[in-house]
Image (cartoon, rainbow, N blue to C red):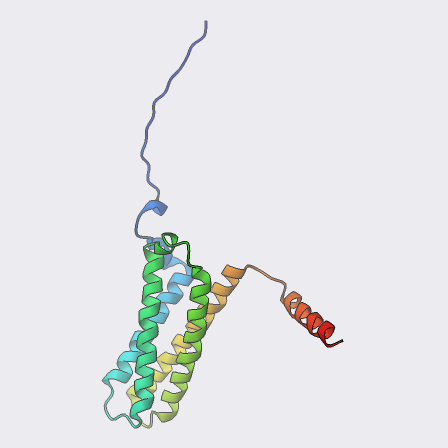
Length: 173
């Protein structure tokens, strides 16, 4: 006697990773760094924008443009991770794109913060804006380092340098 057992079970279970909104990203280190950058850039922009008595008009316009531009760009990156939009566009290398934006952003915000610190005079709002610019620079440098480490993977520190030195030595010989 053989028995055949047929089971028909159709369960629609949905995990937390299947939703449109990835709220878990806000609790990760890259998510927290991006939120910190957005907050620091917004405060830096508002401090400089609302300040009265700018000693140097062009220096602080540069600061405003740079902070606002990178605020918008990092907000777009944050929303892309939050809504998982980078998975919908696989033709773009997102880790490399973010790395280049963080590289340029770190350098430009650092330059703008140095200029704002030097040209700020005795206006406390400009000094506060410059301080938040330095905080945003620090957070962007950390995020740049972590995105590079994540996208390129762990590498021995000396192998690349030794290959470049060997190549240079061999080409000079």
